[in-house]
Length: 205
Image 1 (cartoon, one colour):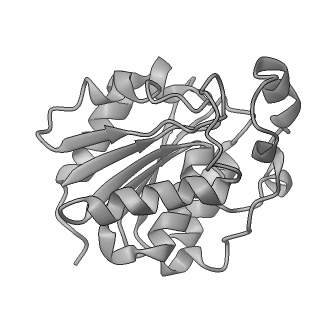
Image 2: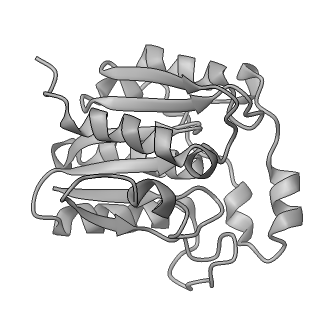
């Protein structure tokens, strides 16, 4: 089994390292970076979020068996698109502080685009493009999903996690006290423990 770690719009492959280093698992691990986002150099072949989905699909196809997707923020949207495209290649999913394809404006989320552009003025413009509403399709995802949210995140508030909990048939929501959008860094030990338990659970009957 391979564990694929997907970052958010910060794009860095190092984002999930603090969690991965605390996982006591023998599985292979792969860390994605998103070209053109954050401080990552651009790639002329990556011109949209759909191109990122394509890269994940290629990696899943090359993996020896069903894999695990661990995704943060924008990476959760990529993960859901991949899970919908190749459900037989997905064993389990971990989503943290992400829209995962549900509209967040009506759920009290703040608009992250202005602050993101200020932090990463060189980032690819397509990061601000609208994404598909996956709400009607998410109930078709059968893989067990662990939803990790912080109670202090204005970008993806707990209401988003609760919406996903109602849409994904095999989901469990855990809320981390005092955590915000970077909970995988600030609460790495707690997040790693929750992920490890999720990966070692028996599949749903």
